[in-house]
Structure formats: structure tokens, C-alpha cells
Image (cartoon, rainbow, N blue to C red; front, side):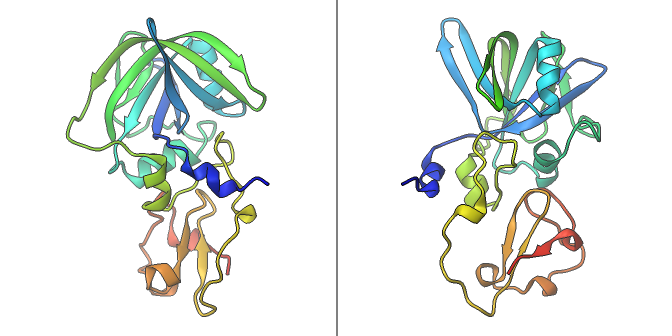
Length: 226
């Protein structure tokens, strides 16, 4: 038996991983970033092969990791986590800096960043694991708390996109019987579910300018699922 809910007990952080140069850049939200060695200081990033950012990391041979804060905006997470750089410039209206490798480093909603030069790549099927050696690291905000995947899922009610290595098909998760009078509405962009029974407010009673608390999608885009 594989109880998929058990996978939610694994602890993750949430990060924005970027690559490119001063003329072009792209990035994505990742929850699979970890330090693999201390001498030398090397970090691993897991990236779906279909992600636009994968080609940037391979082309520019470098990447940056920005540690997201708990209060990182829904718009920031929505832009880097649920939209494609093939269709938009993700760096527009985002505060970035350039350091040793000239890759764009996101400062908005970040506590700290690491900048790495690419030293190795591993093929793990649907994803690449990029290994980078640390070339610079700085604290951006030492007063905030890091955004964990557990907090993102349980408090912000967000889910991993399909390209994420930790994606779980919610239709395969057993759910408890809900109040038959309540309804649920799902954001088609990020998968956030508005549950009337839990929120104690009917979806129809929300103001017209209400937006998804995870990715910033408009109320009109939500789909009723129960």
C-alpha cells in the first residue's frame, strides 16, 4: 500500500530558482533545493525537463536560489510558480540584482540568496538535478521566517504544480465526507481550493475583486468542483 498523504510529512522549503543574464532571465518556484556538500559548498536543484528554466541553466551554466519568506506575495509565487516564461517575461516588475555570474537574483519576497556556478547535471527521468558550486551568498532580510511547503499547503492552501517533483494528484487522495450544503471552488492555475465549509463564507458572497490567495488569479476564473 502507498498512502500518498504520507509524502506530505516530508519537510521542504520554497525557493525561486533563476538563471540567465542581464539581457534575459527566467525562474521557477522549487521546493526541491538542498545543500549536498560543505567542502566545497555545493547545492542541488531539481527541475522538470519541460521547464523553460531548465534550458536557461544549461545555457548559462549558473543559477541563483532565493529563499522565500512566509509573507511572499501571492502574485510573486503565482508568476514564478504557475506561469511560463515562454509566454511572459517573469523579471518584469520584480526587484533583481546581479552578482558574480550575472544571473538575475530575485530579492522580492526573499530572506537570502545563493548564487552557484553549474558543475554537474544528473538525469533522473522526468527531471534534471543541477549541481552548483556556491560563489556568493547574502542575507536580504534577517527578520522574516522562511516559507515552508507545509505552511504553503496548510495555511496558504497551495498545491505543487504538475511539473514539480513533489506533485500529487489530488483526485487520488482520500477525502472525508463534507457538509452536503457546502461547495468547493478550484483555481485552475495553482490548484487552490476554496472550501465554503472551512471558510464559513459562500464563494458567491466574496467581493468581485477577491483573488486567489496563492497565485492571484481572479475570482471569475475559479471552477466549482462540488
